[in-house]
Amino acid sequence: MTTASPDILTATAQGRLRTIVERLERLDEDREAILGDIKEVFAEAKGEGYDVKTLRKVLKVRKQDRAKRQEEEAILDLYLSALGEV
Image (cartoon, rainbow, N blue to C red):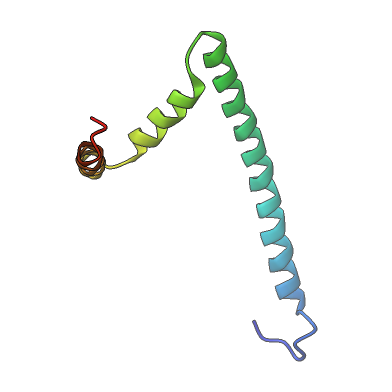
């Protein structure tokens, strides 16, 4: 961005800034709508007797790489075994 003074934006820079801010505002609105949808689905699941805390864990596990997850589980089992917890 080229400006004559660091305190003044060119018309092009102002337009670009406005476009960026408006896009971010729309995305933020979309995110809020999606978060509301997610909340509704969790409420529906809870209403049907599913444990929401466990569902959140399932989602987290499914995001992980299978090999990485198995490695973490093996280390967890090792540590718990060493502590006499298994």
